[in-house]
Amino acid sequence: MKETPRIAIVGGGPGGLLAARVLHRHGIAATVYDADTAVDSRDPGGTLDLHADSGQIALEDAGLLPAFHALARAEGQAMTRRDHHGTLLKEFVPADGETSAPEIDRGQLRTMLAEQLAPGTVHWGHKLTELTTENGVHRLHFADGSTVESDVVIGADGTWSKVRRRLTDAMPEYLGVSFLDVRFDNVENRHPGIAALVGDGQLFATDGAGRAVIVQRNSNGIIRGYVAFRAEEDWAAQAGVDLADRESVREFLLREFHGWDLTVRPLLTDNDGDYVARAFTALPAPLTWQRVPGITVLGDAAHAMAPFGGHGANLALLDGAELAHALHEEPTVEAALTRYETAMFARTGHLAAASNEALRGFFADQPDGGQHEVPDREEELRAYETRAAEYRASRTPA
Image (tube, rainbow, N blue to C red; front, side):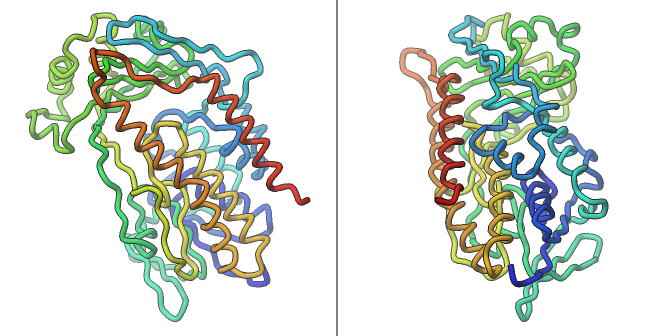
């Protein structure tokens, strides 16, 4: 850019941190503001598989692909499919050297990205409450009463983004499926039955009637994931379930998942810690908006979608890299933001729509008690490699 704008990134998740890292590698200053008091001040959630055609490309652009592979778990690409009786339906074991979509704990990824930024780049404990604009200057208002002025504001502030409200009235919608976060610690010793069911990677267990358990190996002997079911958004209140009372939740799950075999019931009842209730929400897809000078969003703030396909974090990382490249290569901020949004809309819209539709279909009743199909893992991995080659070729000057 011919300009030297002040750039504020709202949100210190993977997408926001990656954008800052690539901008800094281009010699462009940017500051990140995050509501958390520190990089590890809250539970970051479970694990992510970073795809060769998106997340890994972004990490390569940031110079962090070797650091990722040092932490990643290639064996986590394994996938096991079982019915609600525990019967093995399908199994995939990755070949030696398979690196198309290794797993990494969310906390490990976030810490790795934050540690690669210069001290002081991330301002922790800054919760955005409002974004205003006057005479072309954007002012960020934080919960502690402080304000910051910026020429460019990048919203990496998640599904309920406050920055996005300056671009569109679109809001996330409930997809009709709720879930409970579950966690099993020291599984080889405390939960050997669950460890055997899950294997080294991910387990899908379903009954064909809108109920599922989807869990994944994390590092340090932990298995995390969720118990999911079709329900009204206020299902707990309707069912009289006290979410703060584990026994109340367990009693509900045993009623809701009646008919599930004793071999798989520990996935429902043996949770270490409290159950955390969440709802699957997504933005309308495909979602676009008219340019607003100096403001854009990335990741879930731009295209929050159902988790089927595992695209969310991968697209957030790639968004961050592509936005940083555009700001470096285009002559003006507006040219850069226009280039970024045009490409981002085209890249993410169909994936978001397909992911949302896949979730609804997966939790629909199957006739005659049949089982829902899940993506073929081998085909997914080969597709990531093919698209990665195509993507790199498209970025190479003719």
